[in-house]
Length: 128
View 1: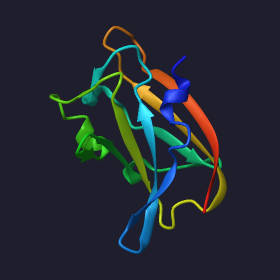
View 2: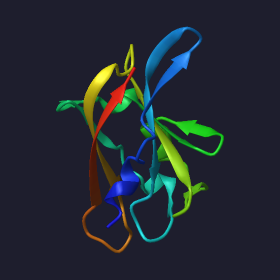
View 3: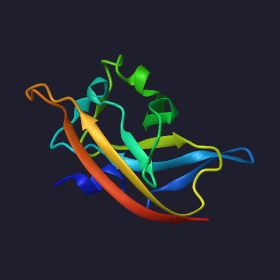
View 4: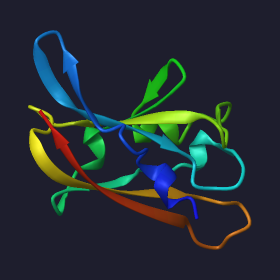
């Protein structure tokens, strides 16, 4: 139901710092019917053309704050609400050029479920 929220359509883009492309990013909304504390958001599982991206290459941004997923698990004050758009950044030198398939699985710990909620989205994108 919320799978299209995991990678927002048309939001995959390269990220630059100065003249260097340091990775790519996409917008994401929570794949749950209500908000959650960000400490309950597990690391996204991301692949590019079937190759897994290591968790330490991921950043999660909400509003004006950015975390690693290790940092996110200890933030007990910030909530990711249903209507909030987060940005997931993948540190990958050179970013993405040409056509690629990007898959992301959003993993959430829901207090009343005995297992994590996993929502998958895959998009084929072409970037210059």
